[in-house]
Image 1 (cartoon, rainbow, N blue to C red):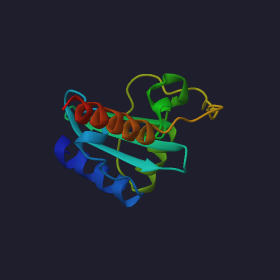
Image 2: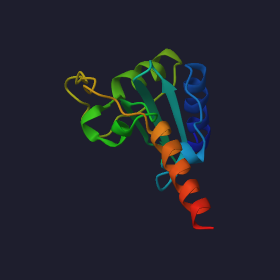
Image 3: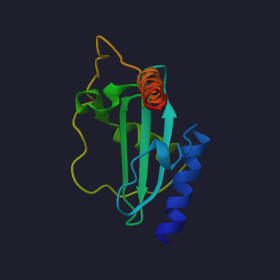
Length: 135
């Protein structure tokens, strides 16, 4: 099967499972990335899946992009088992290269989550007041 057709099948299955395109401003695009989809699991966690032109997939569960802690690798884990379950459910053939994680790591919620939007809004207001004060 041609890689682009296979990737489209995977993408459509993921969309059926509730993943969606967050848009280019909400996701770092990696070299060779054909698609990137995200699903909010709850108020804290999201599942991210990237498909690459080479036919490889990458999946992880991490803190929501709504929080600064999203940038901290301690709050991220491989989500290959969840991705494989979706592929099996939709009957999409796949081939595994490398080693699968032997256990699923349970992620701990940080003691404090820091939403970045209020911080950005406050910084914008301060910058605007500074700019207006210069005149």
